[in-house]
Amino acid sequence: MRGLKTFISVNLKLLFVVSLIANLSLGVLNFVLQPIWRAAGIATALAAAEVKSEIEEKRAVAKARSREKAKARLRRMAVAVPVVGIALASAFEYVAYQEWLDENPGKTFEDYGAEVMLVSRDVAPEVVDEIATQMPAWMEPDADILLANLEKALSAPPKAQQSIVQD
Image (cartoon, rainbow, N blue to C red; front, side, top):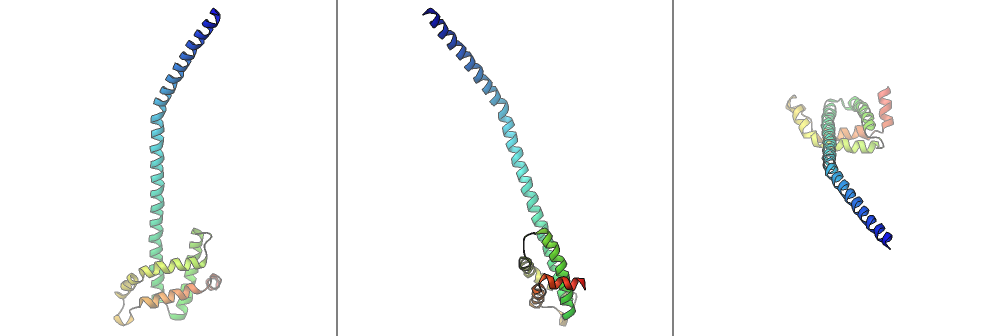
């Protein structure tokens, strides 16, 4: 009986000491790791913000490039000789379409045409104003005619445009 009492007493004291050491270890570990976890969280948030900023910057650059391409496209349409100009504009469009296709795999020519027309409608008045300042009043282009010619150039399927480029 005395041995059992000693055994229980020793085991309770040992359990208390082990529990105390375990709690102290966990407390110190928490004290050390918590700032590291916070720093990691902050670093992750900063990295995510930087990636988001880069994506937004790329989108802005792509949008600006798209606007400039649309302006150049409309300028070519404005000065194009009716039949030859549309063929040449179609050739330019095919080259631009191939570049766009490299940047947007999996999309179709119809997607390209819709995107081009959307941006072109946005910049058409600006381009017409720019061209109008460089031409006599009787030669000023009409934005609706420019957009109609652009739609004609975009209505040719890519294979037809490719044959124009290769000729």
